Length: 256
Image (cartoon, rainbow, N blue to C red; front, side, top):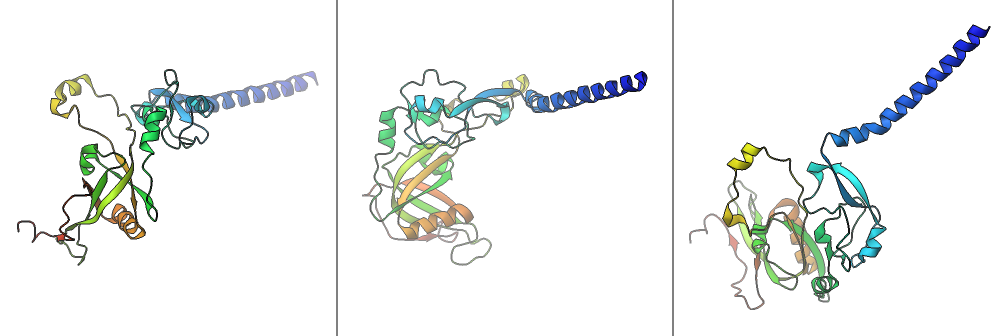
């Protein structure tokens, strides 16, 4: 009788120990997975933050999290030390990494948001590489020409019928934002020695730019369509720039 009772107690104890081991292993699985990817601690937004919110407000809306190094933006922050007096440059959403570009002085925020949208117009945003945005040198308040390119033609959908048109003239830029860049895996020493940076590239902007313009309803349709199915290119076009009227550029017209 005693031996059966002792065996039962041992079975229960073994079951409890086994359950504890399984739970402990499961809880550590995520940490082990992250550890294998060179984890980096960064501040991640946990509650929505409106543009203009102070750093003091921001402190209660972010938390430190470990993320794989290859998924962390180059300018991601792991502390708010030294950011006193700054404010959020844009609305922050839960889950995004807090990058340095998101924190600006109140004066800079006032300047970037000081371009009023003319009555009757609406704002629309699109993302482009720097070479398509005048080298990344656009600012809120500039006016731009918006070129739309269609690979199979805008008039006749045929191969080798590429067309380009300066479709929207003197559109008002209301905001320009630079998207954060993710880091890449560390190169080997040999690769680093073999790929020395070109000194001419030192001042070139990198990463995508988010451009917001104020346009009417017809032109907003054109921009959204081009962003989805074609491609866009911008020029800085001041209000007194020459306007020779609409023209569709084709292969046949290129050398005329």
